[in-house]
Length: 108
Image (cartoon, rainbow, N blue to C red; front, side, top):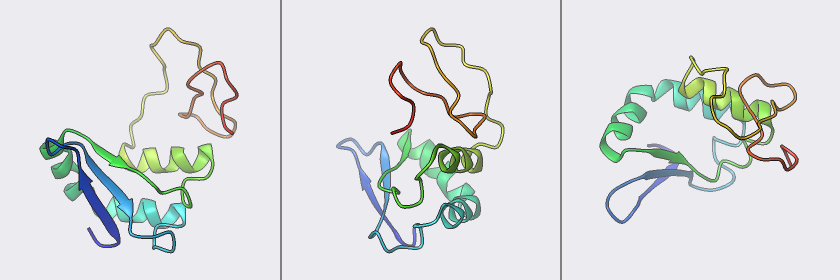
């Protein structure tokens, strides 16, 4: 995948995708989402092969809860709005699908 570094866990999974450097084409959320949308088949194929695809190190593009939500909706446009777990979750401001993962402040 152009502009990305791929690494694998010791048994070939999970697949970890990271930008080559912090001055990559993935510094802006729209660019990252555009790449994901145009490589949907490739990502799906890798998901089946490796069991998981982790996107790591995209800190310049994924800055806010809204950025994360945009990215998640690009990967899966039909996200569920309901949370069926037992721990308390709080929806993050300006989002529909991004919740806190604990009782701590949601976004630092």
